[in-house]
Length: 453
Image 1 (cartoon, rainbow, N blue to C red):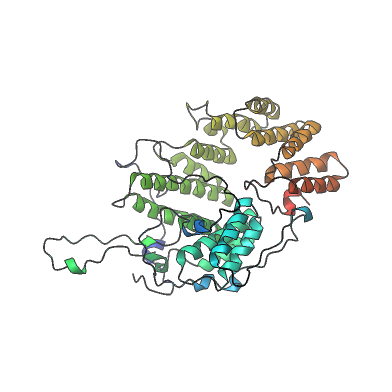
Image 2 (cartoon, rainbow, N blue to C red):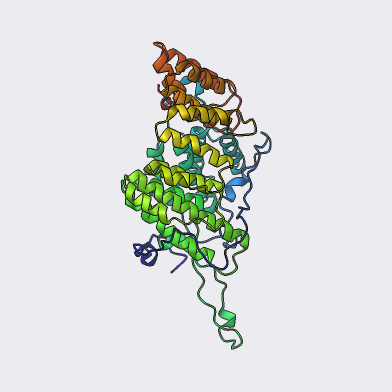
């Protein structure tokens, strides 16, 4: 493989169809090197920074496990991602007037660091549509070198992710096709040390050829698999792509010199790929295959409660309530498991029981997901005919500055059911949301569909 090639070449060995096996590549490794303690990622959530502390440095390290010994220049020309025709024009017209914010433009002569800090601030505030527009403006400007792969991939990921978060998944899917085949040789590089000085030294044994490393950050690779399957209209492409990178993850776990912290993160990523592949099967409508995959799905040795919750929710989606009940086993007292019981009651159509169970959870003041519990309680009250209480409950959450997408959608639905003047109420709701303080936890550029306008 030539790392200096400037064009895409199909790497047959990496893109071949995964062979049939009783143990799939997305199953977690059961090897003697697996950690005995609960795996924790070295990546920590950072608190929201003050307005004068944005530097744009976060765009240089999208993937903490990316090779840190990349040469200054890889000879990779990414100009095909910097063309204007790659990116769609965005509009405010699909956003309610009270929630609209102006698109930002690049100031002539402004340095790249200043533009990146502005983009970082928009992301921290949750203005994803504005951030999507501004990231494309930076990518198509003269500020970017076509060989600055870290920055280009980071900005391109920001563009795609923000489009999806702002309800423009179709645009994101079309733009993701500009990456073309992520399994091609173009996106790999050999990182082995040069051995020319040791070739004639009998004391040095020849080392095995190093495994080529992918230069695209992990978050972008995973996102692109899903978006390209949508863009090309081929669901099977998405599942095949997940299995391909799953095989690569297994090689990275077993790679020599991998630290325990890195191995734990790779194991978590492998479990995440397994969940994503099952979800892709459900989206395809192949519930039988999804159920079989759940039966053989193996998470890391000590899987997290989040992984168990994701698995339980997938079981609810395929309709296996008994299996979902047994996912947590003896951990029935955890906060995640407590959510599962009323969800099962809802899935079984026992909304009165679910109301009582959600009320019990709502009385627990130690929970940090009170708004989520209140929303689910309101939905159950809606199904039991208690519209007034459901409306009051959701409006109380909006007054407490909890206004995530599904809550707003459910409240708009209740307005349609209990009032002949639903349009006016939705308009007032949009104005109330616009006055809420910025927390960076929700999308501020809400489309009309969130409020059913």
